Length: 147
Image (cartoon, rainbow, N blue to C red; front, side, top):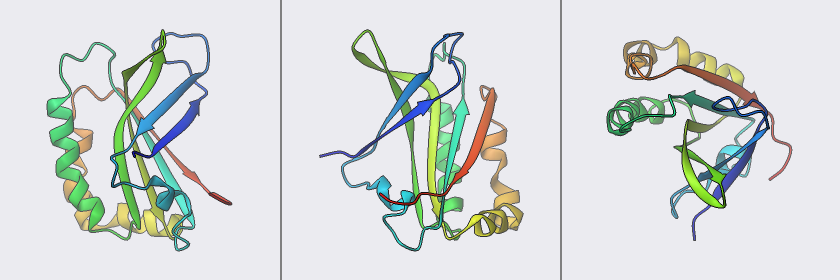
């Protein structure tokens, strides 16, 4: 049985006027609750939204770039690392969106900032920033008080 995360996204996507609910379906072996505080070492969760054009012909090159960055993050102090393309309900059919979501668990914000200041991060972040289709990204730190 797979685990999922629903996030209400309070900004319209693709010129929509209403709030968008994004749904992220994780692999059966994944347990995203670890990044949300089920792992008691996690003091803060990081959620990153990567925005891409709606009319992407293929996500293969994007996935390859993300796959190159994943081991860098896994070598860091992150306690949990999950990422997937978000889905949303379109006429009762779940459809892939143009939003890729990272969910990470950190001891605290300082641990994340230390990672961003590391040589490993600086030497590899280009795998994300060089994605030509990337329109913008948003990163949020969230303190979860219970899962």
